[in-house]
Length: 80
Image (cartoon, rainbow, N blue to C red; front, side, top):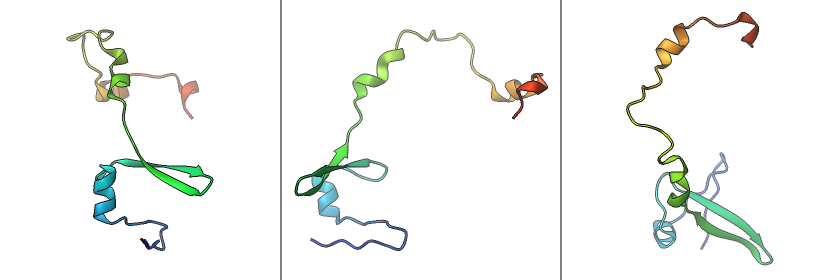
């Protein structure tokens, strides 16, 4: 199978390849270098790692208001 590289160095894979990998728009792919070339693998999200803050943030304890934060006074020494 041959794929074309665009002037922006982008590659379009045939739909059947992406279907076989189980990936779609917005998903990521990993390239692993091996002795015979590169291996393409889907980058999976481990949802078990996303729950580390579960139970540490209390519900109903206010929200972060970005507009209010921007209105607050600040020390000029902290500016870039």
